[in-house]
Image 1 (spheres, helix red, strand yellow):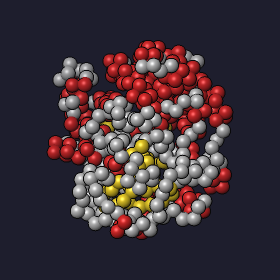
Image 2 (image 1 turned 60 degrees about the vertical axis):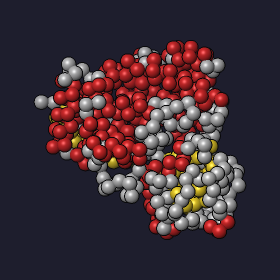
Image 3 (image 1 turned 90 degrees about the vertical axis):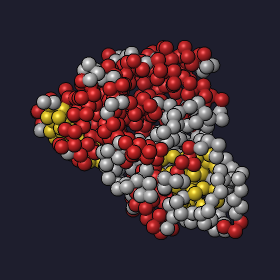
Image 4 (image 1 turned 120 degrees about the vertical axis):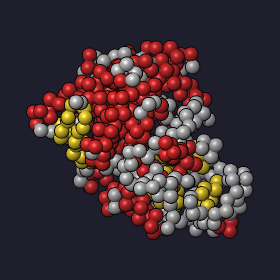
Length: 493
């Protein structure tokens, strides 16, 4: 991935701000982008060791903010050698500069979904799937239309199938809690999520197919082959460095697992293939895209979001707040003849705020990348910076959505942050590859299932507090997000 990258020593005096490079004139001081990339090969390796081991992810970014006194700077992003040919990026860490990554008139989104490297297409049947396509590519619109069609065609199945799948989950958690005094949540969550998606989107119950209960395990293994290079797996450093972080894992090792998933989707998504054919997309290509959208984008998202919800509701909220939330939810459902409906959920502003706050604090997609289509001027709160055509921009979203110049008490879980006047801050909630106040279209890169994810996450909170008055949980860390154990549940009184 080679591109022209200017020296970090380029001077402000060489810069001309014009309407062609900046959508609005700026009164901010023009500043050269601080930081650098170090010596070829050794600089990226040094940054990778800092990122994974010496500092850790957040300290890696924060220490450089303090060093350069800037939320915009140059650095290398993992994995670097020998997986990514060019790890050099311009890092964007504030809520003002970050949104340029959504502007497809300014940045190209081709093959940057996972960052400075792209996993082998052998992991996706030989196809570059939708997430790796730039909107300028003709298939982008066609494939996104297929996903929009799926979401619309099966929307009436979402509420009942979610209730079924998560009541199964909670029944199992209660039994384990009664037996052991605590119940591990994450594995049960993964199974419930996959069952829900199979039932709601495709009318198939995965446990009744050849997959049995193995779907989540097969997905997790396949995900490792896609994103292992940018994960810290908790293995000894020498093993991680010589395997996951230095060389792509050979795709044939996961071919059998992927084929089992592919067979499930190929036989299940009939109604979607008719729409794909109308768009000029083969059944095979549509299947690989549906598999990716379901397993990577959606399953992968809920694998992070639902434990995050339990983490914040369990640790930061407490029993008094649980009672307030339960009252709001139960009153709205009661007024809707005891049924969970979309209109009833619109009468739950506190519940909605809780969902947005968790998506702000722990966005399921933390990283965004885009390559500058032309010379640009990017603004932070404090300065303006020149970016050259072809340079890779990178944003770490948890810093942008905890920007202290935008959010009061940015690191805290504030349950009612987005209630009433607080709703004006929703434009700074960016989890979906776009502002929460905007919608996905065929011409942007905002998540096709944005509204589905928000709605389903709301359903999770509603189901939880219709069933329980309060709960407690213990929280640890996992490779992706939080590891949650439920320690107590009080059934609804």
